Length: 333
Image 1 (tube, helix red, strand yellow):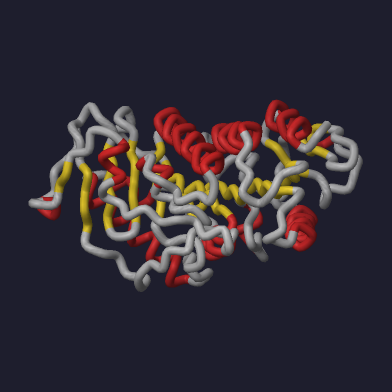
Image 2 (cartoon, helix red, strand yellow):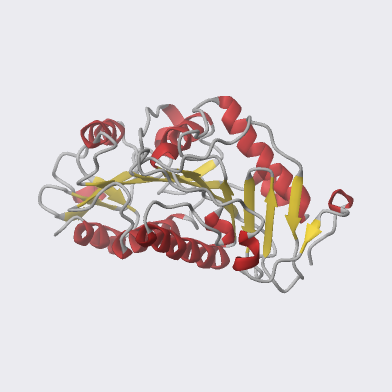
């Protein structure tokens, strides 16, 4: 049963459908001239007064506060982790199902489908989902002040929902495009708090050093991407792998920056599903991993970590064989 805080007096609104939730969030168009995200210009890096959406106990909890939104599934009585989405689109769409402000209808539809998959994953793995209205041309600066703002948002959500466990919950960070720098910076500065990192066509992906190299990560690139430097990102991946980091990288053939194909959606959620039960301990969360599978991008060959004979700096790491097989199919083998 959710606890009602006195902080919420007079500030609680019921929402029965995602369509009603849309009315609470101003839609922002994604400026195609700025391919990294919508062109909204958010305010200063300070949380605004909270507006909470607090349904009955048998329904999901959806809250909007300042530039943030959070979803906690109805069946989750103790939150085990937070899926934090940062990036080019308005990532409040992931928790609430509200518009992402995508540049094309098919991209908006794909993001909505991924959001539904994230919410299903949250119900399955005991997660909350946190999204932000800071995106596009004004992403979070990659700096400690942004980290603190995000942690403050989690703490505020904990108070609004009556779920104190949120303040210590590990983060699964999903960084899209312009959200990539802060996603990796957050991981570098707070490796004990980040359980996993997934990057989709990021502007940058590091550098990572020290304990941050133990955080499992996956980076997906688009072959026809005209807006990020795939060669630079590939070099960063190789540097991380040479240092023993449990990273994977997949280049999707024949697609542009904004692509979010069904195969990519399945790959994203499948990897998160496998990583999430692990937490910050165990053989997967190590540098280098002692178990798992490595995939050679030149041949598509997959081998157990201990049996791999290729260059490990080029190879992608996976915790399970099915994930490695999905990677091989995704990159064209």
